[in-house]
Image (tube, one colour):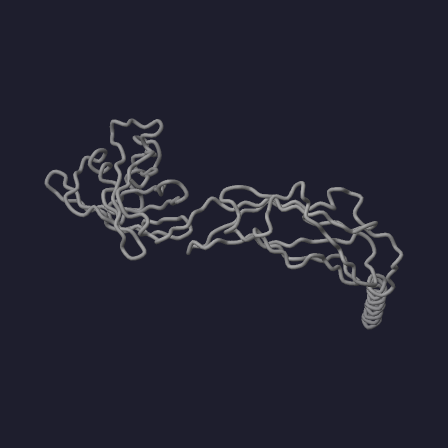
Length: 313
């Protein structure tokens, strides 16, 4: 009996395989071989509305917006290539020709296929900084154009991020910096505790040596004057970021005993205005501690960190 059941199961499996193969072949043939060139079809843009912004590498180089303009055939695939033309929509387009490249002036939908595309890439250095521009196309497929007006118009809203690279790297930040906004006294904190002071910066290779930051906090809020140190290294990245790796910052004195402290933080820089600006958040630590002083005493402060915004004098 078991042998008969095995034989029936094997025979049934063969039938299923044969039927499946025949169905696949027939379906494939209907799509790619027995094409009806007289069948009605329409063509439209796919993913025709996009919003994007350029970026910047860590080295400060612009990252272009790269995408594809896609034309899709709605209906039975054809037995010959279809050329889909498109034109600039003069009423909506605000991008000049030097702001982008497009790999072809028309889109080819190959025979037996249902879509084709061309590549679109911005030229960010020629785009206005911080402004959104529009790239707009109109599809020209004659009688085969989609009856849906949204399908025959492509609209990309593109923005070059408001970023101005440095001319000389970290050297562009050398000088005295004044505080323009203090994260702790700028809102609900009691300004009697202390007010964040500015700092000075000198170039150190690709980095900055910063002096003075945090001394107002340690002396005013913490009550320990600085007796040594006071300088730490800040790393400047070309993409608008800055980092303060954890490191020694200064030595203070309390009741005749010296105490060492460390600093760690991060932030951003801007270079598009009249003067460079830094936005810095940081904390002061006992060596080896995981929690900084501002975080530990947040109930006395506005936020659990120190810092603010600073402008180069």
